[in-house]
Image 1: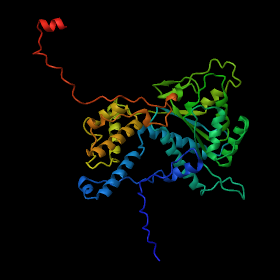
Image 2: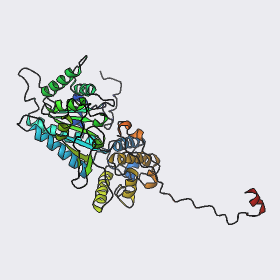
Image 3: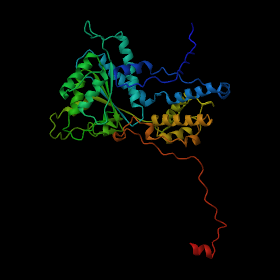
Image 4: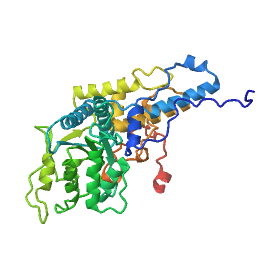
Length: 418
């Protein structure tokens, strides 16, 4: 006997799954597997769109909104340099047969410039290679035990960070229990978890949430040095690391294009006067800068980025040249200062407005009505300097002409009224 109840219609394929928290091992692994699984809406012109039924049009519009909310993080010349250094340093340490501390990397830059996604993509590429080489098993697992393997661990610093809370975040990634542990026990458990999971790269994101106001406050430095002694490559990611006070105030050398940190003159009453110096020597600093608009080469790189971005738009009018033609590159740069995160949010909001109003094309006049605000970047902590400067909207419309006062009465009555 057949069931008279009609079967439920399948859910649209563009609906997102459960939220992914990359600070947990199983969730990190799920992100690595599914990060390129989203299928954007099909390209469609107006005639094809109008031939759809009203319901199919509505579903297509929702699919387009999902596409614009899931724009890919496109590589840039600056992010390519960061990705290369991160992957190179991890591979240098992971495939080395020597014992000892691995050289770490500090990735600095402003907010919404794609530091986290750039680093995570490089980590995912390394993890895929490492698992394949080791046949997806823990090569150091003891006989009769589970194959616990986590080549990469990703952690975010809490807003009010301490060495204890940082250790707890690392143990949260592995799912380790740390109830009632002292700081010494937490550090010991962190080291044991890194060794048991054969972790080759540990990322601590938002590192500039750590506030070191005194040179004698060595707790966080000692913790990081202790972790590095486990032959794991440490990747620190943060906003303006050289100027944050995390180590010491640095200076950018325009000749070498590198950050330099001056020698210590006075360590005060530090119990470990060489800790910070050791820490600085064990990291290579790289800056992830936004696009610039100062030379023909930089302008060309910006325009090329816009050409690639407009290929991912799903508006009914032809999107070729929508972002890269005419005066739009200069306009978009003035609205975003070349920050890719702000550009993405501006385009996302403009596409929504173009779909809802039936304009189906992005113009400077339409984008003038779209204002990106700090609420569009809720995962960036303003107190830690992670929120980027958002340029105000400068309307492109013509200025209102002054009123013609030729026929105004300037007689005695008007003068006495003045």
